[in-house]
Image (tube, rainbow, N blue to C red; front, top):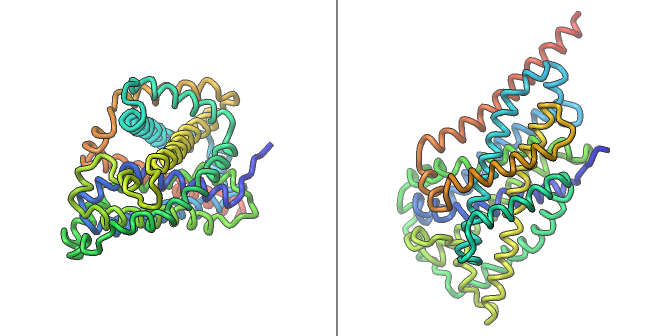
Length: 366
């Protein structure tokens, strides 16, 4: 039985997955590169993410059930989907593993410092594998449950840190020049390209829903919220201190002045962030499992889920923690690999779509 999700659930997944991990990882990198104009960098990232996502949506809408991979497989043959699926699955397994590494490091540093990192990774992976086997609907509904309090946090936070905001923290404007803004955007493009994940969500979106509108709402809102949060970090901490903090976004909640129960606020928000991070990890593993199993014609996905889930745990331990990820995030080969993979998937989808249209046109003429 086909499972359809509403536009609200679809947008919730996009907001949570696009916002949560980027907010944990990106502010330090962006503020170090672009200074107090890092919020402009985030808006540039949002444009790139929307271009990628809307291009996929446009291609998907050319086919029944908005499932281009199925149409390519049925019209051109399985061979035509293998290059796309191979790149796409590898891309999502890599994101799953690196996000798993980020979350285990975040949890170990801030919550469970005496627990071995690999134990945390195994626990997270087991939860992720179980959720993946339940399908996309539980992931979408959980994302909606995270989104509602997340919006409340974003709306209330400016008032909570209002006494610490200093407008002079962002003066002078373009302190590092527009080249700094572009350099920050270049470093962060691998994160923005994760909006490619709409390729796997589209087939589960209700056919009565306008995919362009809800993709715009999901991806656009996530980057707008991220820009606001990065701007708040600049207004409170300036442009130099955040680049020296491990998690500058988290430090904002240490100075909330709405109540004296700061620890409770921090704990609640940390749980919210961890739930969102688990959704992000789960979704990328789900996508890798679903596309890989469909391409290979596998009906029972239990074993492939276990294999990819375990592979992500080993890759997370090999790749290292958040500090290592931040170091390779500045490497040209790392950035180029991500962007090339994203654009290659788009190009192959577009080429296959063109071939299908040409074949259909030839059939009609005949």
